[in-house]
Image (cartoon, rainbow, N blue to C red):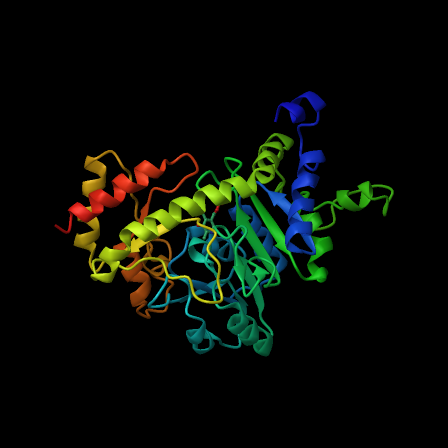
Length: 358
Ligand SMILES: Cc1ncc(COP(=O)(O)O)c(C=O)c1O
């Protein structure tokens, strides 16, 4: 960050922005990456690129962050909410086909806790019905599906560098583009609807207003912060994985007794240690554990609230029950997991949880 300030270029698309984008393109194999000021912005860019017509339908899990749905609602889409799986909060790929109508245009899988959705199934359905796939990879940095980096499988994807994520820049995000046909328009949308990128490349001799867009690019101060994080990515990931593994080891005996369910990592997925969550058999059991941890100075928090029941969308939802989404809303809790957390804290947290079952 000091270097960005002393170099004197603070606006977007400078040296650090380019370094970060190249890092993702080379390490994971995206056709093109563009940094954004948030994952929400990256999802909004994806939604614009999908060229939705009013009434077009987009399939989104109900158990996700508001932005996954909101980005498409802003483009006039009708959201068709999908339920999560019994065994983990990802959307159930086997139930997608039943939601497809002639108006369906996009499927948006969310890789919850950085654990992959069943992408082969999703891509097969999408290809057969000629649909676009936008991966919400907000939590999925450096995680894989059958050896393929998450975010590189769908046509487009969105990542978050919000301070709650593994790799952070306070607020921040990235759009990953895997289908060549979206690259030029993405660059224009990113730069307030202008063809400035082509001007800088010397393709045109002046730039102007050619399309819709917004100011989606972050300043160099944010990009420089992100670059420092990316330089230390292995160390950050290793520490998170050690903490995650300790939680798993210490809580396994209670999970085996049926006190709660621990995160499931299917054979086709890797674990990027974004989150350690537990799913309790009831809302009351979860509340009890959250309260016990709070009494001892630890903040454990629940997560999403089913979007099909949200104040904003419940009257537009088609009325289907989505029981797994509601179960995760009521029964899932996230345990503290961040880079500075000490192993002794993990041990203490697990002991407090175990005390609850004595
Ligand atoms: C699945 C998912 N998508 C999108 C977002 C939005 O990310 P951001 O805060 O970077 O806009 C979040 C935020 O946590 C998220 O969990």
